[in-house]
Image 1: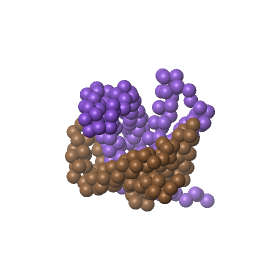
Image 2: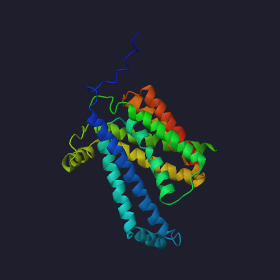
Image 3: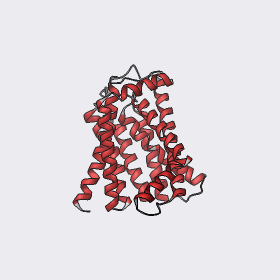
Image 4: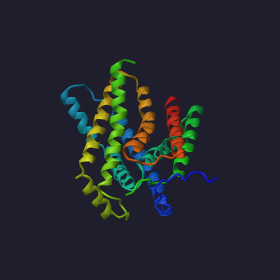
Length: 148
Length: 124
């Protein structure tokens, strides 16, 4: 007996181009977001905490943040992420894009381990393996299941 | 964990997810970006900022952000973990129920693996 067909409002087999384009966007988004966070984190670590919790000190702190080049590079990447996120969501399912972006955890951990030589616990590697398996499963499903 | 923290946590997850779902819903009124050129992308953004659902989404995400700050002011950072992990399941459920996306068994299983994986990462 043929298995019941799970109708996902097939878009004439979802052209491979749409799928590849979606994959490319997910990878680019993950890179934008990680690089953006890296710049913001490095910049804020260099700036540190406000000297005091008075209005004048906080204003001075804000000026120092706004004067930092790293902050603006970080913001630019976050902006790039947001525009790209809206673009890919204009055709792809939210329930496809959202879990797929979790692959970013793997990227950040790998970069931390390989580039910065950060130690990674076994539990964390196990988490990464689960995330990669999960994203691989989601990636096999239809990119879009609703009519546009 | 005290009731107020539970409330903040619920608001972080629900408002955050709701914000993303509203954004996705707004994109339905905008249409698909078919050609990947600056022109069509800018056109999409221009139409997007005229969508009430987009601004609903922005407001919800802002509420979620401030609720996270309030949560972090009273609880350790590790409490943000269930918020992050739960948002994958809640987001998928919301996409199924509110946006009519078809979530196959394969996709559900993938989402659950991601959710558990994110939890483990935050613990390790």
